Image (cartoon, rainbow, N blue to C red; front, side, top):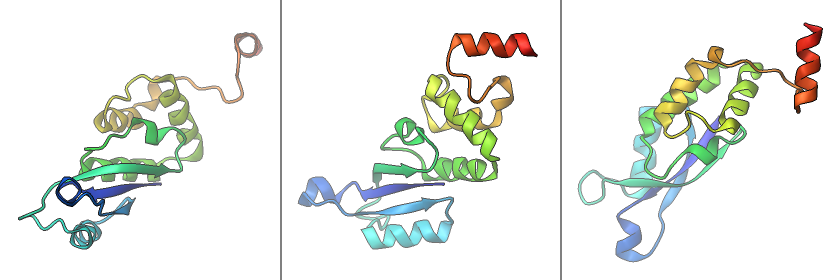
Length: 137
């Protein structure tokens, strides 16, 4: 569904090097721990991470994800996205493009669970087409 480039926050200011790796979502606890081990997040000297990049199959999703997102929340979102039908994903992309309820991962999670609050008509690109669609119903 999507992946995030997780970076060791402590190493960059200390040594001026970026140490990180992509983590694919949805993920497991073991995969997260293995990634942390590889990038030097040990919970003692280095225990903070940040995300420098996202790659996603969901159009526009990366635009609404920040540097300090919770990996647990991202994982939950990925599980929800994975369960969606293609038509639901298209509707989600359209709603995200509208820009409401996209301020946080929690908002996006809520949005995925409340898409029934929105009407979506694929292929309608202007007011004239919308009017024609309403008349023909």
